[in-house]
Length: 268
Ligand SMILES: [Zn+2]
Image (cartoon, rainbow, N blue to C red):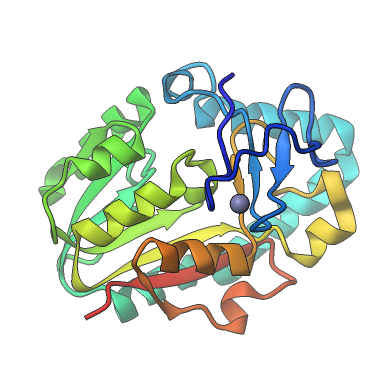
């Protein structure tokens, strides 16, 4: 596996000791310069398309966790379902209604287009998906809406769109998987219209449960999750990419939640 420098500040951390959260061959590094936590040796994009495709590894991870901690997994599955019903269903549509102007919307890492399919009619849905199988299904799902799912890695997919093409971008549970997060955010800035917005949802490495459960925290996924953002490292990367922060209040990065939500905007 090729090693990468810190995706936030480009420091070469090859000689730094691995974090205690490293597992098997997967080396987690905690950048001494900028505090960014990341997987130093992520699988190449090509491997993600088949060998480590998310839909395979996430199922494997779930089964492994269940075997390791059966009772806790059942509780956690039940809690997740309940939380989903109460919260998750509402947060994304609300943020979309509040921050997206009518127009083209891009979901990066859109899987089969589940989110896009449910967008209100004033939006034309577009997606980027690295898994060939999911992208194909996504295209079928979106056919009636006039949109399209591009089968590509996020960075090449985003780079292929013209400037100021989208009024909204969704990256829900995506940026933690992206080996080039900063260049991707820079592309987001370029392909968004002025006044456009990107909604970003990622696991919060600084959440209380990560501190409490350590290596057993649900946010660790090997090798799916290659970036472990805290509220400050996420905000910094968004700003470094030339975006501004439109919304990132305490309820959006509440330490009791495993996830956080940030709305980035394009400065006027
Ligand atoms: Zn760094």
